[in-house]
Length: 128
Image (tube, rainbow, N blue to C red; front, side, top):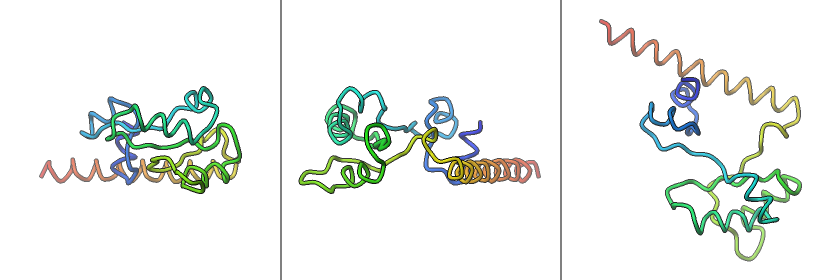
């Protein structure tokens, strides 16, 4: 229910299958850290994911697994001869600096509250 409310409040999608069913959307996530570790290179992991996984799944490349996020973001975005197919890049919240994590948490909480408010108002208006 929390993910649903965050979606209603403005988030782009949800990762939990049950939450996705509630909002009638496909779940979305990231290219796993494990794949990056196995491949040994973020760009190669994105390419392998793109080659194998259904094309309707967005390619969200985690850029904080092996190298500095700034340089990995440039590599994934195409700062090399043949950029991989990536929808966006992501950084795991566990690696955010404390201040940044607090800001992100506040934004997510606000989105969830907005979604909850929209849900309550919709229910109230349907009761009239």
